Image 1 (tube, one colour):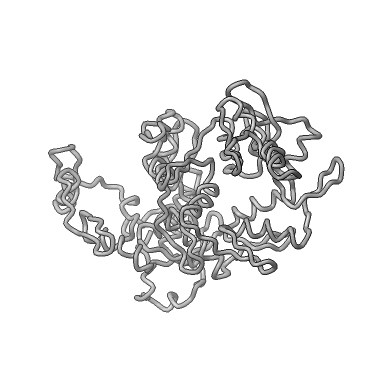
Image 2: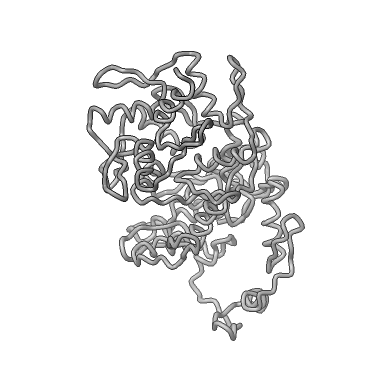
Length: 439
C-alpha cells in the first residue's frame, strides 16, 4: 500500500477531489479502487482461494507493503547484542538500540514528553497542533500519522492479516491480536494499587486509575465541560459543531456515529441485552449494567481528591465537586433559584410546568422523574433490591436502607436547635420541635 498522501502536497489532480474516480477494478469480485496500490493489496484477499489471477510482476511495485510481495528472503546481517534481533540496515539497528539505552533526545516543547526518534516527535506534535495531513482517498477521512492511514486503508481492502489460532478471529493489526489472545489466557497482570482491581492491558489500568484521581485534563472551550481523554473531547465538540451525520429512522434524532444510533434505537425496540447475574435486571447499555452491579459489590471507584469521599458513578462525583467550589451556574427563569448541575435545574423546572412524563402501567399514576417511577413500581413487583449488610433486611428504596442503617451505627443526624437533642429521623425531630413551639 502506498504511503499516505499529504493534503498540502498533492501528487496529481485527483488530490483536489474528495471522492476520486475509481479506475482500478478487481477482476475477481469487481470491486473498484481509487489507487492501484489499494487494488494490489486487496487482491491478496483472493490469494489461496482458488484465484486464477496471478500477482506476477507485482514484486517490482514500490509501496509500503512491497516487502509482502517479494519472494526472495532479505538478509539481516546487523544483530542486536542485547536481544538478538536482526536488521537489514545498520541505521535500523542503531535506532532499535535506543530501546535498551532509554536514550530519548527529542523533547516536545508543549508537554515535555521525550522520544527516541525525531520523526516520532513530529508525529506527536500534531496532537497539540491538530494537524491531520494524511487523507484516505476511499472515504475522505484524515489522519495525523501516515501509519494510522495505512492501517485504516486495510479496512477498505478487507485485509485482516493477523489470525487467532484459538478461535480463528482475524485482526487488522498485530496489537489487536495480542490484546485478544490475553482473553483466552485469562491474563490480568496489571493491578491497581488503589483498589486491587486487575486488568489485561496497561492502557486499561491507566484509564481505570483516573477514576481514583478524578483527573480531567481536557476542557471544552464552548461549555467548559472537562474530559479524561482527548477523543472524548473531540467527540463532544461535534455536538457543538452540529456534525451529527447519522440519523434514527424512527424519530429523526441525529448522532455522531452508527454505534450511538444502534444504542438509541433500543429505546424504540425495548431491547435490553445486558443482564445482571445477581438480580436478573436487564439494561439497554453495558455501562448502565456496570454502574448497577456496583450496588451489589459496594464498589465506589470515583473518589473526590478534596475530601476523599467515594461515589458509585462519575455523575455523582462531578455533582459532589461543586459542593467544594460552591458553583451554581444554572438558574431557573421562573423563580431565579440557582443549581449546581443542568440536570438538577431540569428536575426543578418540572415543579413549574407540572410535567409528569413517566406513567405507571399498573395503576396509571404519573411521575415527574424516571427514578420516582422505578421506586413506585416496586410496590407492584414487591422487589427490594437494597439489602442491609448488618441484618440482611431488604428495602425497595436506597434512602430507606440508609435511614435503617442508622439503627446499627447509632447515627442521629437531626438536631434540635432549641435543646440540642438529636434524632434518627427528620419526622421525629419535627414532632419534637412542637414541644418547644406549642403547635
